[in-house]
Image (tube, rainbow, N blue to C red):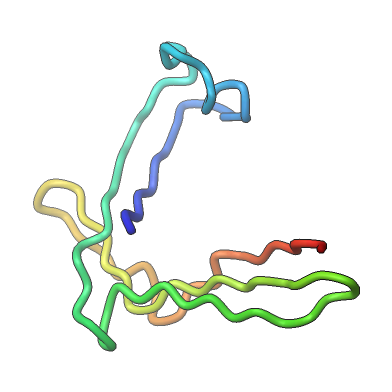
Length: 89
């Protein structure tokens, strides 16, 4: 898996993401890429699943992820809640 953080000069929607070629606006201001992790130590993508009504809720955590841009790095978090989504049957 590849994890990237992109910062744009304005709002980005589905139309922008699916366009070919990519529109010139909003422009990409910054792009950070996650460093490769160490198994069971860093760079962990953890997904937990629970029953939700007639479907399932998937919750995504990113653990000990370090982001890099050139010579700059930062620890995203020891446990970053990326979000969750519900998938109905």
